[in-house]
Length: 165
Image (cartoon, rainbow, N blue to C red; front, side, top):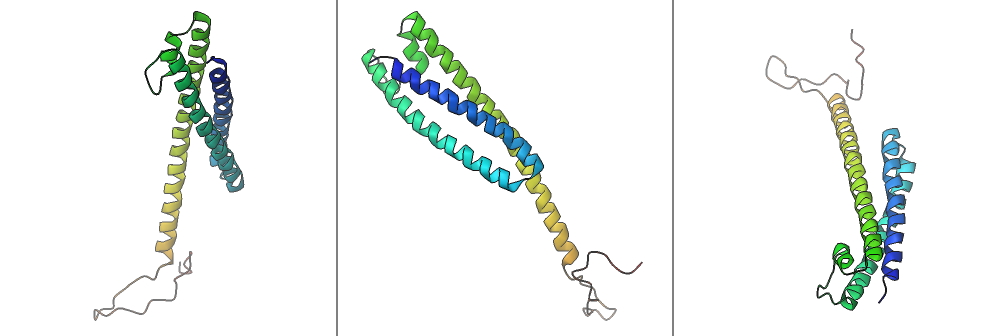
């Protein structure tokens, strides 16, 4: 088996990961602007790329297994760098280079995802806090008279601003 199908697969993965990196970078701006339509569209795009990456990765595993077997490797799932050790210098350098690019792209995607997760968690905490504040303002206030019985609440529930000054 030749190296070409594996290289083509890896080149396609590089393209998809670059596009995914653009999408997660764009996601930060969308999260800051809080545009739900753009966020939904961005999530659909991201999901499609992840499905494509999964498919390419499954193909890569199979191609690496076949190439490894043709090179006399006993591993059922040979790593790209292990395969490179068995190739001629030119092909080995090419495989190592693609491996480095993929590794770097994956690290950048993970880094941006972590930053986006912090933004999402912060937004969620703000929304939860705002909802709790509204709930506290809108619920009836329980008061007691001098006799220890519960007084009838003044009908102020549902008002955000009191008329009393």
